[in-house]
Length: 397
Image (cartoon, rainbow, N blue to C red; front, side):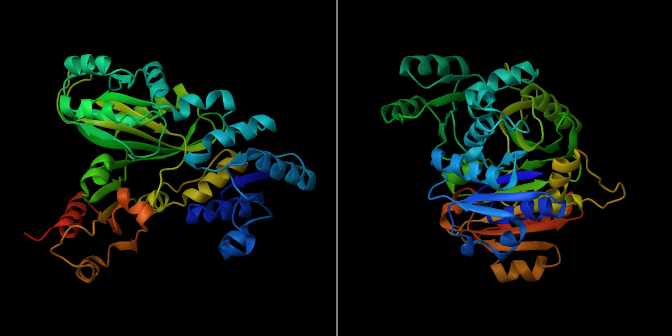
């Protein structure tokens, strides 16, 4: 089996996907814009062949790279990056080379466009926030009169909470339209709720092979815009209503053979037109693994190897997970340099080193959504999670 892995060097931990595929006897054919001798040694050891392009954005260069692999290794069975940025290009390359193990180009619009996702949520019987395209101020003012403030403005196609804004009142809405970006934006009703996710490995026939999820204490939009702590956790067991919503969403989108990260709100209060407190409301879908350190957190929480499970799905379309495995809460806390904390870094390590699995400093490009200093902790109870979060996030008066 020949698996073309696009951008296997970024994020850096993606070499683990390649290693697991190789251990399953699969030829891993990497394409990236980095010289081979600058790749991590672990990635080099995992690749059967490698083709460097001057830019991964150059479609002709990508075609030549895959054509080279076909010449050397025969027909290609998979083309994948597991990366949001390359979803459309992955689909285009699959379409060009008749690789049927992933979405084709005609399916990709509703995978990437937030406005297109709304219709699919409706097909799945899942409510989503009312919205409109940000084209005319008059229409947005009428929308605000109907749904009230605050509103949320976000790029129709975009990753995370970059360039996402909470519009508190009419003045903020008018100011937004006065500097409306050139790319398409949507405006949504603000949803009062906690964000939870359905993170799953979906098999080649659309069957869920492994399911988990997270609960996010603070929205990424608020982390980016207000410089507050990033806090979320992978839970040991996903709530039944989130599982149901995730499965219905995967079926409605026709997901096959991939890792996904679907986001929902759990309403924290009754909202007219959306539901009652505790109901699930669709936020957006991500047809790739959850970003950052989440794959490692999934492993810590579930006592699994998600990279191995993915490789087993590719080769066998089945996975094996021990029923007697121990599960945990795995919590992420990202602290901000602009905040003064009651407990310094060394104190956190001294007090919680028995639970902390990893700590790191984030580069500036990633710190906006993740914080500057991050901690991953594996906790045995929700009470312990809350104690850890309180200790890390306690600020100086």
